[in-house]
Image 1: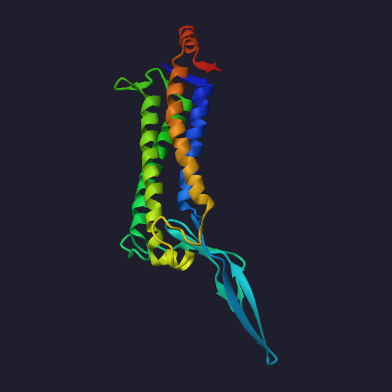
Image 2: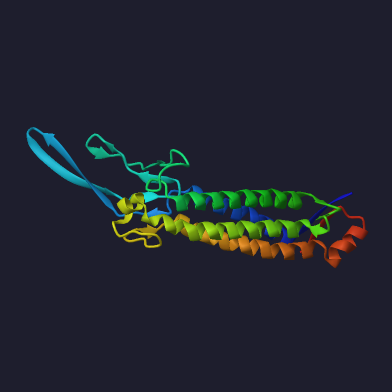
Length: 236
């Protein structure tokens, strides 16, 4: 027999698990991890033997595997930024694709896979709670929380390793000649980095809330309604 069991804590954990997975994925694929030095382009034009010049400025950005810049079209810069990957292969040299970023990308990818698995599991639990809500004697909520904890540790490793790639030629051109591992020089950290930090903190929060979600679905009120023969159980 199947039961649909909905509690405030289990629903909150489910929604937060989905949000966290989306936050991590969004931050990793975004090209706004580093905000570079404003770059000025001098654009010369000639009209009736009168030479004129003007400057247009933009701020380049770079992510773990992609970057944003403006392309020059004729005598002007295109208004829309051109964002694309700068990676041609995982064997790219360190100066083009830092080895630290390669390792960080692997950790984030593994974390994303684990969070996606946890998200799918949480959605299944939210829609349909089976009479047997355990696996080898362990609560499914507890297993999902453990998976989230592992994903959080992988994200922490990615965040710690990522700044080690700041000494590459790509970052020297973007941030200045004094950029070195863990020294950002004239660049600024972008919103993608901070979003990943927030997502990592929320991952650990999710793993803690999974315990509360499990307790809420096995509370006395839930057991009483199960004994009454109810299939749709909503408990605050």
